[in-house]
Length: 164
Image 1 (spheres, helix red, strand yellow):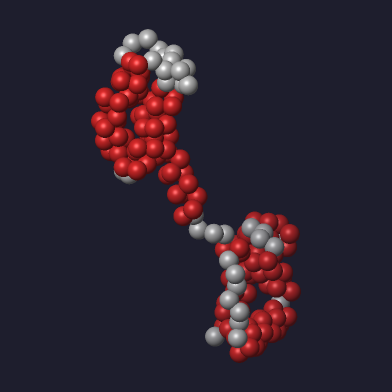
Image 2 (cartoon, rainbow, N blue to C red; image 1 turned 180 degrees about the horizontal axis):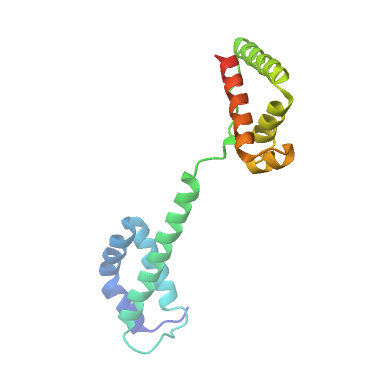
């Protein structure tokens, strides 16, 4: 690796100040020392550098490396702290009693749905299972939107009463 004595001297003279400067940005002295070392490798890779003050260029390299590190750390932290998707989490095993209770509730709901008038049953199934809007239900059943709303509301009231 080629470098000039002036590059090396500039780096060695300002190394401690550079480490302090980067520590104030990244918050970790060990990481700051690593970044200052990386800056040195960029500062004197082949002895060429922009004209002007070598120290100012060195500070600019260190600052850019510190900012890049901070941004990368923040992004990695965000990705690690994101909540996992609900369906990826392991399911808790239901006890036999819980499973039996759930089956009983489903049987009661199925019985209530079967006992509803045809239009109410269609409206609640379209709304809750099919994801249809009230306007779409009204159009499909050839009723007004208010009537579609009433059909869904009444069916929901019957289902809620059955669960209580």
